[in-house]
Amino acid sequence: MLGVNGANWKAKLRELVLAQPDPHKVALSLAIGCSAAFLPPFGFHTVLVIAVASLLKTGVPLAVLGTWINNPWTFIPIFLPAYVIEIEIGEHLLRENTVFPSLRALSKMPTSAIIAQVKLVLWPFICGSLIASVLVFLVTYLLTRVFIRFKGKISSEHQAR
Image 1 (cartoon, rainbow, N blue to C red):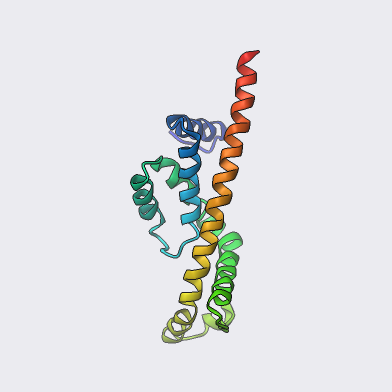
Image 2: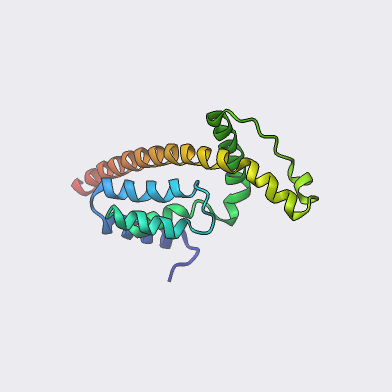
């Protein structure tokens, strides 16, 4: 049973990583999951990641774990600002200038007005999300490879003693 105990989490994560001995596939799996967390299909990240990881024959459990960076606890402090930045990136790429009302103003609008506002930022959001997702993929992949190499050296030195 997976509890709150940090040792349990570490043991389970270690099992997931060791189940896939190829560092490339471990890094690819996590990168797929983390990058998918920045894409628009809210609520469908897990389904998307399972499909992509299966298609690429990487570790599905590690990829799903990567999507968990987008969760109720991280949404407001991390992902809400990321979505605003993604919209700005998309506007820049599409050479559009969309004025989006504040959250306070949105909360007072009727549903039809909110839908109209969302339609204004939809394409910039999708384009910006794709750029952010690619960047997150690259950073996650590289950091995971470096971490695995570093951790492997430490483990090898420790076992040699």
